[in-house]
Length: 85
Image 1 (tube, rainbow, N blue to C red):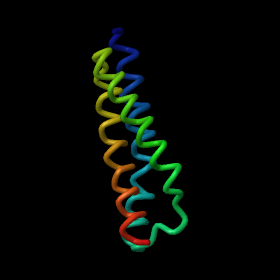
Image 2: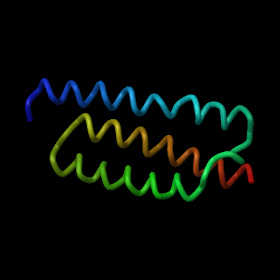
Image 3: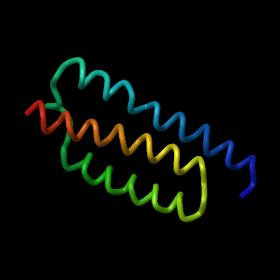
């Protein structure tokens, strides 16, 4: 794969993944996930896992890293949603 596009993918992954960090922090700090949609995050998590599998298949470091971290953050939000009912 073209290295320039892989760099663009890494930057995109950093930006989109980092967008989840404030939500995870806020949910953890407030100990409340009332405003989060469990269905949305479950569907989102499955989609992220599929993107991760695809990234592994095409050997894209950007897709692998971004989706692994985003999947972990989404899983944390799902955990918080279930824990802070």
